[in-house]
Every structure is written in C-alpha cells, then in structure tokens.
Image: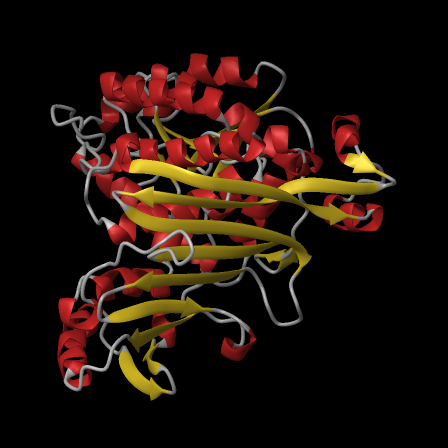
Length: 457
C-alpha cells in the first residue's frame, strides 16, 4: 500500500507550511518532521502517548476539543509529565476549545499527524474527515464500534490510500513481552509443532482479558467520563477490548499473512452486563447522578453496562475464541489480567496471570504427547528465540517449563504506547505500512462488529 507515496520525513517542510500554520514564520521554526494534532481527547490513552518525548516530533502540540472536564484532564496529565523530576517531557500545548473545534482543526491543519483517543461514537467520523483532509491518523482502539462504523472505516482506509496518508490503530498488546514471546515460540517447529485446528469446545487459540473500571494510571486514580458507561458512545466490550485480542490472534497465528473477511466464520457470540452501584459510579466519574443518556440502562439505581463479550469463530479454519470481562475493581495487588493459550502439535504455549503468578503475566511451554526426545530438541530450538531476547531462560516446572523473563523486558503497559508510536513513526518515514496491516485491520473490525450483530440477535 502507498508504494508511490513520498515519505513524510522527506516532505516535512512542505507539509508543515501547507497545513494551516498561522504564519510562515511559525511553520519554519521547527526542524522536526512530525507535528501532532490532538483531537477531542477523552480517554487517558491520549495522555500516555505523550508520556514520552520523541526525537522526530515537534514539542508544540495543537489541541482541538470542546470545552469541559475531559480536555482539562488531558492537559493536567501532560503537565504532570512535563513537570516530573525524572525524565520530564517538554510538550508545548496550543489549545483551541469551542463548539466548532473539528471544523477549525480541518481548516487550520497545523500538523500532519492527528492523534485520536476519546469518544468512540465520534471517532470513526473524525478518522474519515482527517484522512479526507490529507492528515495521517494514529487512533486508539476501537476505530469502529458497530456495522455502520465499520463501513465508514473501510471508506476511510480507501481515502487514506488515495491521499497517501497512513491510518493506524494503537495495538499496545503486541509489545507486552509474553505476547511477543508466545508468537516467536510458535514459529519454532521443534518447540510448538504446528498450530492445531481445534474445536468449538477447545479452540486452538484462546485469549481472555479482565479489566477494571476503577484503576490507577500514572500513579493517580483514573477518572472516567460518564459516557464511558454508555455503550452507544464507548461501544460494548465485545467490540472494544476484544479488538486487542482479535488482533493478537491474527498477528500470532498468521504473522504477516494478508487476511480478509472471507477468512472469518463466526460461530457464536454473546454479551452480558457488569452492574455498578451509584457509589461505584460516583467513585470513578466524580458525578453525583447518572446522566439522562444512561437512564435506559438503570434499574432500581443499578447501572448495567454491556461491558463483557465473547466471540467464537474460525480464522482460516482455525478455531479461535476471545473473551473480555469487566469488573469494578481488581483484588488487592492485582490489575488488568490476560490469559492466552496457543495449542500446537508438540506443545501448548500458555500465558497465565492469576494469583499463583502474583498477577504478573508468565509464559509456559507444556508438551503434549510423550516424545522422549522433545525436551532436548525444544531446548535447542529455544536458543533461536533466546538470541532475539537475550537473558530469557527455561525453568522446569510440574507441567513443563516456565519461560523466565528478565525484568528489563517488563516495561509496563504505559510504556507500550511509546513503542507503538515509534513503530508508527518508522512507517511514516518509510511512507507506507506493511502490506498486511491495512487488510488485517479491516478484517479485525469486521470480526468484532459482525460479532456484535450476532450477539444482539
């Protein structure tokens, strides 16, 4: 895709001068090829992208948003990053707030990359209008939350190709070390063998993610906007967090393979609610009452949110399952957790993150069958992955082996946003995404939005 497009880095001066800076003098001040526009930040993921400074990115960030608590919370967090004692950032936020914020951004275009993390009901339209205007877009997931949004997203990808800009979503979970190692170990035939086809009852690849409404982000309790609990605005769990899980399955089971909706067959999907009390709602939103748009989800003062969802499907004939669960608050010492299994002909690769693991993700190799030579062959093949991640090692346990991972690779969820951003910058410099990324993003959102329709039937 975009094979004929010129690099953003090569055309930096032209892009900056032609994208609505107030004066030519302002445009020529920066030697940085990338200039960020943050549009309507309503989710803390917008903040986390700016927890780090980037060599290629100008420190001036233009923010367009409606007035309100959400943009204030975003600016407060960026200020916290700027003023911290260790590795402070130096973002200079230029802010416009007003009801015409989107129109004004599209008219001025003071940068070349739009960052989107906020209300998902609005997001797909923001994406489409931004790429139509010739702007690159780095968007938080999900980029579409229903079938209509999926159709608009497909139009946005077509427009991005026509405009020679890059539209990309923020898949942080690819950078979590146990996910990365599970993928690499699955490539080693002496360790994993071949991915099994599985059955509906025992899928070949399963992923489950447990999240919490009340949590700590960058050292402070997270305040969520009230619309986060409105599935018309946030999207149901089946199309939200499951975006990550469907992505990981595609990425690990069929690395760098171009996929399409024809490769997907949905077999079943279901959704169910997490119930919140008024005091719980107030704790995480700081609002005393439920807004009127949530009234249809409230009965006897209890707010029921369709935050949970499960999808069972086949991908190229391989049975897969993804499941997301939302609780109000994690047990003491715990946080969001992840479980995953890939079933191979020689071994299963399992990520566990329960109490036994002290709520830290750990990766295991558990052999299937009784091949007496498996251990020796597996350990020899493990050296290939060890060369990629120096310091990892095997530790024998009751069911097989634990992959012991040095602390240097466990940099935490918040650090993964900078890793995604840097990868996206590499793509901008190259002027294209890998050939498989766009069709696989489309396949991913087809899977989640079609599953929502099935679950609602």
